[in-house]
Image (cartoon, rainbow, N blue to C red; front, side, top):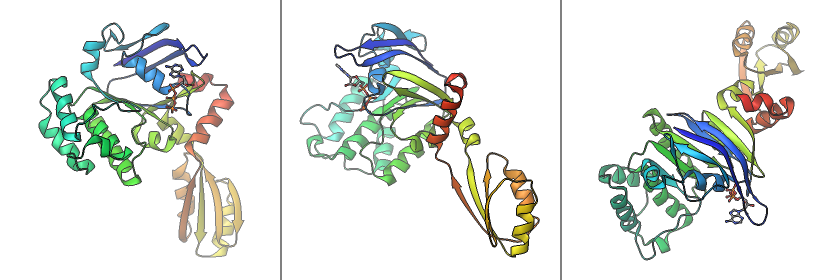
Amino acid sequence: MLVVDGLTKLFPGGKGISDVSFTVEQGEVFGFLGPNGAGKSTTIRHIMGFMKPDRGNALIKGMDTWKEQGTVQKLVGYLPGEIAFVEGMTGKEFLEFLARMQRVDSTIRRKELIERLQFDVTTPIRKMSKGMKQKVGIVAAFMHNPELIILDEPTSGLDPLMQQLFIELVLEEKARGTTFLMSSHSFAEIERTCDRAAIIKDGVIVATNNIHELQSMQRKLVAIVFEHPEDAEAFAGGGRIPVESRDGRRVTVAVQGNYNELIHEAAKYKVRSLDITAQNLEDVFMQYYDRTGGKEAAAL
Ligand SMILES: Nc1ncnc2c1ncn2[C@@H]1O[C@H](COP(=O)(O)OP(=O)(O)OP(=O)(O)O)[C@@H](O)[C@H]1O
């Protein structure tokens, strides 16, 4: 669906992006992660055909996004990092204006999205908060049911409830086969929606990784409180599960994917309670990247 190949753009100040390459398959949700100024928006603007690359290109369904920007932009739903609204319009007028440009009858879907996102669409845009403007932008990106949706920091300005609702929207669209490219600062958000993610730093992709693979490498600390101290002792002394610590009835073990074995061993005794804490997935990503020098991470 989307191929980014060697995309390079150097700005006069020396910043920019260098040799950015990745592929997003049809129906995939692909995350694009990186700190401020890393080059996420610059890459996305090239993918949308708004900027001419110095080298390389971006193809959507085989079409060069710079050379065929008019055709390509019709296929895509786009939420920019900073939305430029037409002055003096209400949210409703703006969305109707866009709908006429998109040339798709999106009335029903538009109404549905506005109801889901719960905002007053008759408010003049200049009076809207950042979060409200972001909601107008989300409706604009989704309403014409595009095959590919490109979102630049979609949840910035949204409160936690709305962030959750946004994630649900993405997952629903994904189930319908829509492809997504989504930039974010937040690994947690990417983790809940994406199949794969690329990390960009100083204009260069440092790793591309499969999120499910990372989740299976994620180390979890499980604290089990047994009914009887002697059970805790027997469990800890069994030697089958690596024990981090034991304190009376409470045994803490580290698990990495081998849940069945833990459940099997613990079930031999009477368990009073369980507490699970997960290692931050971002740390797993970076640890993995450091260990392999990026080679294996880039290959996943
Ligand atoms: N038109 C431009 N002219 C000169 N420098 C630019 C231009 N656009 C972006 N840059 C610089 O290129 C770098 C990458 O910017 P970009 O906006 O792509 O980062 P980003 O990853 O999207 O960051 P953020 O999360 O802050 O939006 C930054 O250092 C920025 O200052």
